[in-house]
Image (spheres, rainbow, N blue to C red):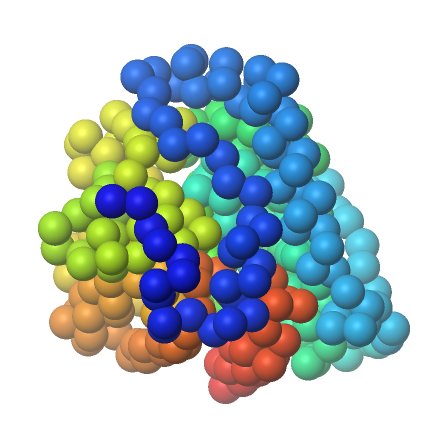
Length: 343
C-alpha cells in the first residue's frame, strides 16, 4: 500500500514539507547487477542522480554549518587488497591540537552518493566545530560512481572503508588525531559499512584500532519487507522505499544468499559482535529501518557489549544528515556523537 504522507501525524511538520518536494525515483526490481548498472548509466538514471545531488547540496548552509575556524583537506589513499585509490576528506578545527576522531562513512545503500555532497560536508563541519577531527571516506560505490570513479560490488566498498581507517590510525600524528579515540560512524548504508568495518577488524584481531561505534539508521537486512520488523511495512515510503531489490542486487546478492554479516550485518550473531567496543545505535521513529536498528542494539546487549540505544521521535530516515531541515535535531545528535567519542 502506498504511503500516505497527509495521514501520518507522527512526522515533524518541517519534514512533511521537505518530503513533498523530495525527488522520488521509480519503484522497480531488477534481475541482475548488469541490468541495474545499465539503469544507472541511462539518461534517466544519470538525471535522477543529478537531481538528488542538487537537492542534497542545498543542506550545506553556512548559517547552519559555518566553515570559519575549520580546515578542510583531501588525502588520496591506496586501498587494499585491490590497490585502487580512494579519498579521505579531513575536516578539523584549524589548530595543532591532537583531537579525537570520527571516521565517517556516508550513506546511499552502499551503491551511490558521495561524502563530498553538500549535506555530508555540512554534517562534517558541524561535528568538527565541536572539537573533533572528522575523516569522511570516499569508497567505491557498488553502482553509481562518486568522486572515486570505479564501481564494484561487495567487498570493494568494505575493503576501502577498512583501508581508510587503518591509514588514519597509521597517520594519526600527521592528522593531529588521538589514535586511542577513533570512533567509526555512518548512517544508513554507511551504518552497514561501519558495523562491517568493526566486524572485519574483529576477525583480523585489530579491534584495538577503534574506541567505539556510533551508527545512525543502519541498513542491515538486505531484503525487505521483513515480518520481524513492523517498521519495514508501516513506514515504508517515507523518504525511502525498501520494497524493491536494488540494493541487494547491486551490492551483494550472493553474500545475502550465504548470510554473510560482513555484507549484511543483520545476519550477525551474538558471537560475531561479542567484544565490540562501546556502541550507540541511533534510530528515527518514522524510518522503515527503525526496527532492524533496534534489533541490532538488542543483539549487542545480548553479547555483553556496552551499548546505548537512541530514538529520535518525529523524524524520518537520516533526518540528522539534512542539517537545515531540523537544525536542533541535527545539533543534538552531533553533540551526542562528539560527547561519545570524547568519553
